[in-house]
Length: 83
Image (cartoon, rainbow, N blue to C red):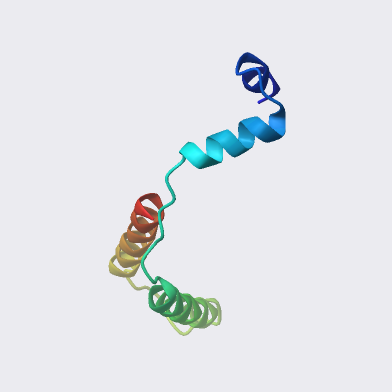
């Protein structure tokens, strides 16, 4: 950043201010409900994991659950990029 500020013949502070004025600010949609639901899902996963470790389940295919978590994660990333 020092180099770029010097090239622009500005102090670092002025350069950062200039960059911030040129950078569009995006406000993300309200993701709080999504984060609450994601936290609930995480709690459920922790409970399931505890039961598996206690021997309550011998085998179960968790691929659907894992795929669902991946979709939620991808949607959060998409919101963050757009926001």
